[in-house]
Length: 407
Figure 1: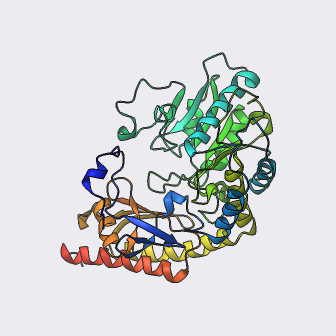
Figure 2: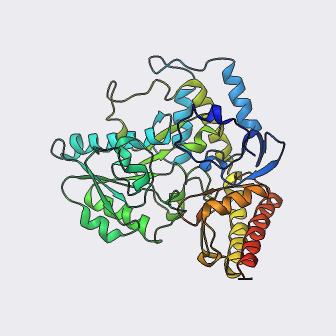
Figure 3: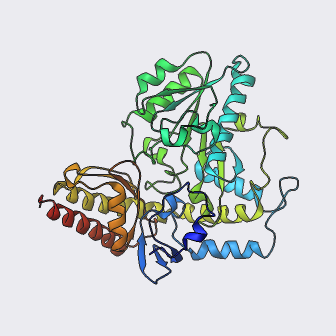
């Protein structure tokens, strides 16, 4: 359990409330704390660790690049950037890539690109561009992004806020249609809402949104920072709907759990409007980031982790549904190796309390809102380890049901 002295924690801004676990090593799906206790990691860094801790292939690529060149800034070219751009766009079926560092930076980049396209191509009046977004969304924590957040914790007392966004109910195609006018340049949605608890829109939403964007000549931007790169059993979550967005934001797993790497991929006629001096980043597209990103692309190109996420996701869904059928979960939402579960209210257990009890038994995950927790183990997890995680979860909920007299 946590061993850090209070005198040290006083020096850290309290913007997180972590579980009382102090980790020191990790390998595959397992992490170890300072006392030598091992845990199954079923959060995987919010999908940043899709390929597990200390993935040998990713470490090899990192070590090799560390010995050669780590940073030059975009003032100069290097031998990793153009191959990374070509390989990532081929993997995602897109035309152009713009590299950044964090997921929030990727979203900011997509917003800027969409606005510029709106002014220079669509002909929207200066300073009037609007983008349609969803309630209960999560795209990052920069000032612009929280301006359209409906989460008071993330938003309150950080104003004044950036204008130019219209919020509609997630998954409501009619509401999107009604919100479009001559100032609309884009829609920005998650194909699956991660922070909200792995919430999926109706099956017809993404295909309908694609048709609507084409009809009204506006850009479709999908945030695949958590849902993309294998998590849902396909390379991108939008692959399930058979569509391709005009701009796609990627991050988290793109850095292999080693360093922050993000990108916007999409249409050349949109991203190509960001000419020299209009947007940039000192570290975006650095040699080390590109080397790691290229290794991630090589893993995904083989398709093995996508197949594993799809296959093991079915098993995880079946185990979770069994727990729900026993009356211990109010709802289960899942796609691939990604699930949001709501604890049955009669159990009287918050998501935080559940995560604390799971940690006591050797399983790590994260609550999100109220009694909801997310499960996102590494895509490289073994079937045996995944069953172990489900056994731990089932055991904790069974014990709580017995304690409150619901068994």
